[in-house]
Length: 192
Image (cartoon, rainbow, N blue to C red; front, side, top):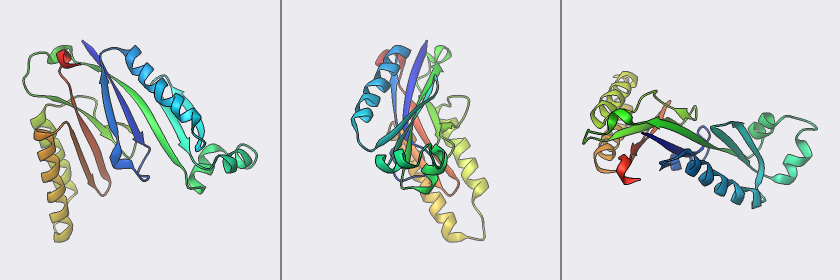
């Protein structure tokens, strides 16, 4: 049985990157309709300067000063140059297809992982709680330096909060230097 996740994120580490959301749908059509409804609202917003349907599974929305955008793009610079030189944000909507047919029995939850910096699915599988905690713990410890005890304490505090979120919430987030990841609990098929 397939499910479809719709990720709505600020691209990269622009302001608001920790507010990434994920909603799950039982059919692709419901996911596409959800994105269409949100994009309809963006089209009415004066700050929305560009909507790019990059692929069938990804849409990028650029927010900024519309008058400046129209004056500069495409006459003087391209879209990416304008975004990097102006106070603009890029939001991404991504549909991720999840094949959960082999996960109907376990009582433990599966997780969808999201790499915030690269705005893509972090891992090519959906781990159970314990394997999510184990892999993130390993990644954090591999990146923690013994010669910076203050940073090590911060990293461990972040890891503790992440682990708590895995077991008691439906969303977990960790932000340690170049390791920024969201994890979303995938609902059981009968709860959608």
